[in-house]
Image 1 (spheres, rainbow, N blue to C red):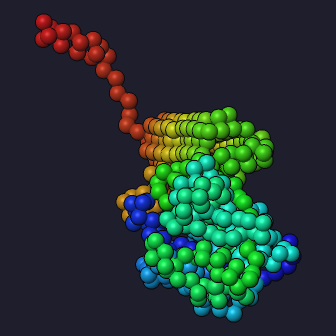
Image 2: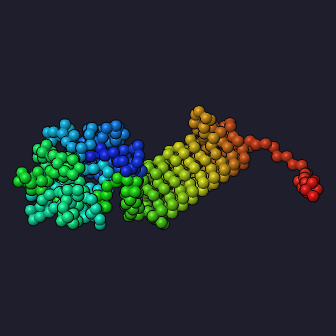
Image 3: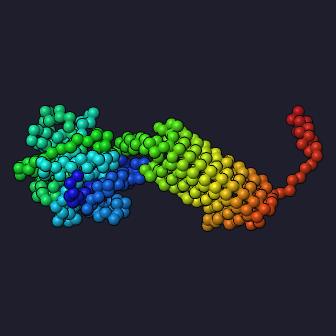
Length: 446
């Protein structure tokens, strides 16, 4: 691609009324992050010289999400042409290529945008290049009217005649414009149309009236899916999940039942990882090599080192750091804790705000009592320690290396290395009591 300056105008002022949400439409998540963030990540691969996001009134959440990219406010929603006009102050002196994108179209690929820019920078020197597509159902999309001389016009569905509505090539709204001609075109857009709005698409007719050439590039329909409802969000989520699954398998992971595994946009799996069915990866999960993740696990904000075995039904919450060859078993929850090399926590256990030393074994039903209603405190379990089943470790507390905690203990004080600590009521036995109890109650029942 020829070298050229690039600016990006990202339109994100839509209210998204069909989402029926207090959250701005473009902030709704796909694979664990706002859809506008997906688009910004794609655009960053183009190395734009300038960017600006057009938002609506009271959309500070978008402004915060896209920072430090500047935002401008479209106080009145008078159409896409009017929205682009709001970027004038940021891009007034810019004379490179200007790419106009939509924050609710998160699936568009960088390669598609590169083809669009390549056409804009090609030998025809078009003033405008529009990204078109051919959906199975053209519906109410605007149509691209193309002739031998290139793109002749964009006709909005409401303004189209029957012949134009039969055209299958539709307008995605995405376009590249010559920055030297942008504001001259924007200034001449009027609202004499069925909706009384200022259509950005009118720049094609205006450019052609100036004697300029216009072109189009065709993209894949699924890339250009606009997310305007919860149903469309679900479709976009499914598309992204399939891409993430394919990416994981191509990188060397085995997914036993790919369709039941759900990834976040930033999930990282090592080589020879095996993931069993019904596993969910939330944001911020990094998994090393040769890890086995059994079914029905849920992870977020955690790291898992090489050779660990997890699940089934394990939950790792933010701050969980699982060491090499460690075992985290069924119905075990780990939060903000380091589980060192070879440690085993196999059943029905909660480990929070803690360290479990290398080779330690934590028995079933053990909990670290890390919260007193006001503060979180730390539990330190030493190397090679053995924690008996159904124990409660009341933080702050330290269990020394190699120490043993008797089953059913409530530990409130430090246990020295190599010691046995038992903290429970003494066992009492009354010989024959059970037989006498049953006999007495049998008589009463009769």
